Length: 121
Length: 408
Image 1 (cartoon, one colour):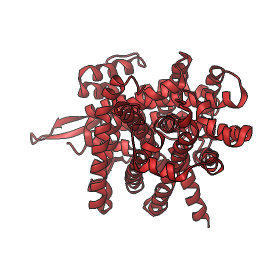
Image 2 (spheres, rainbow over the protein chains, first blue to last red):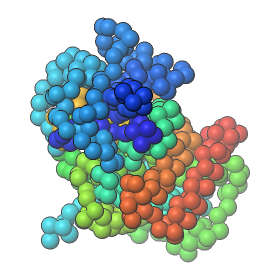
Image 3 (cartoon, rainbow over the protein chains, first blue to last red):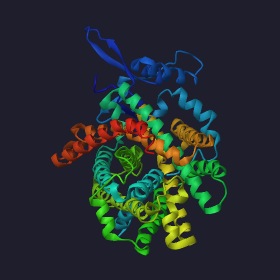
Image 4 (cartoon, one colour):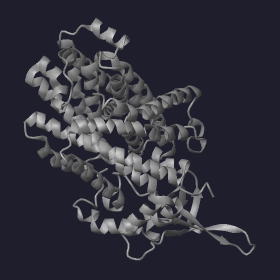
């Protein structure tokens, strides 16, 4: 569990997806709890951090979404290929739900600046 | 041959990355007020930053992860968030001070008021970050920053009493200004030497340039030669200020005064070379602090970051970058004096130093990331002793600043 929380999540081609901000448990037929999904997003992170800092984080992030409370990006644990210094997924980032804040900023800010489609290297 | 060239360029960028507006102001002030009495602080700072930059570079090369990417895993989400907030504020404050330095250097070269140059400098910094290749950016400004060698040359040109300088190094005194002011200047100079953003940038830059374990030797020589050469430039600033400004009883409150020694030695040509040097080191540091602020945020939250991906695929990273540069410009447009801003920035930097350096020492001893390339016993001893110095500086910074009224 401690090995999992706060780890970097990396997709199948090395892109950074987010951190493991929280995890979701399920209980199997044998009554033993297991990690069912990884959760990533400022909503769950803020809730876990708690206090004023956590609340401010949630409020700041919720400015970018319409449906509140904001849902985290949910990654089924079955998509995890292996874990070393990061949690590596067996799928590319396109196959996962996108972060709403990233989407909003891309659409309204960054993609509007000339040259946004070309890496400077 | 190509490796040798790359190594040399790595050293150059370390030199350029070391000296910034903080060093220009703090070193000059130290020399003008206390002569050579703070030379030991530079030596201490250079040894410390070499040790910690080597650790940060090794962590990046072996694990492929920037140090602050790992801070959250080691310290937990809550502590790391507070660390991020403090580091971000200090880095943006530093960015503002560097932008102010760029504007002052341009004023020195053109005579046009610096406030006119502030938005221009902000836009130029952002454009370079948006479009210029990472390595090119590092090398251009690192190389141009070497123009500051003019201060060392001036020292030979001026009628310098070398024996007197040496005595000043070996027998530090408070110069009749009080030990409170002496220690305040020592803390400010120390903070300028080991600025937190230097290691932020160094470790993230190593990941951007895709260092691997094979690059460790080159990285080490870059650190062990580049930072001491940067320290030598800062020492030259102290020494020229000691020779020219100290006897005249001038206290440095502007960038013009920092340039005075080379103007005395070489006239208008000296001023032009100094202005180029000032411009290059402050502009280079503005780029580094801007990136560092965005690196810190992106690495805490796990966002895609860096200059190697298309900006539209790292929208959050580039938004933080843009906002940070804007904040820096806004701070300056309040018409706060850039030199005063630098003095405050150094005090705040000193306070947060442990937040940057402690995690490096922790991660550099973690076998899950570094395997058998963890710190050796001697490096740990050096790191621990240096950490004590950092904590002392951090604790002393605010009381010294208040009791001495920023050292005055």
